Length: 192
Image (tube, rainbow, N blue to C red; front, side):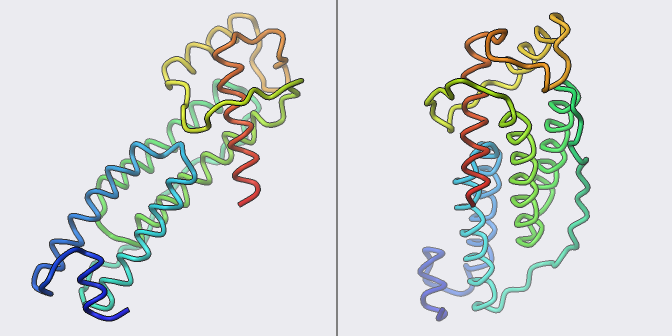
């Protein structure tokens, strides 16, 4: 990549504007990461854009701090649905907090990898459920977190605590739809 190509990528004409342009691009990417944390395809696209920004910064000889990534998320190996959901949510919150606080491209790349790992682990838990027919749903439309929590609470009231207790006949329709979405996401993530 040449300097002119780097400037063109940023949509500017002068090198003196490049640091501000990269910071603005990072700000936009960080906002997009928040809204697309449940969509692996968009997370991959954001990773590619960050890698391109990193290349642009190197070509333009811009120095950005090189922070060490110290993000620690919890291993989500719980067989209990509620506990697993809480771990998934806590991990996502930790990662998003790091996204807010960092302008380091390498840290943001690590955050994307961790968002994908967290999502993959969560989806995989649901993919073990034996569904007669996985509904054809849009993987981009997730059940609201509060609705998911309410569905899990309703399962707990029926004394369905663990993933291996789930079966299709006891699930309400909105949970069937979300599980179908998570199964499809798990299949997508395992292919990539």
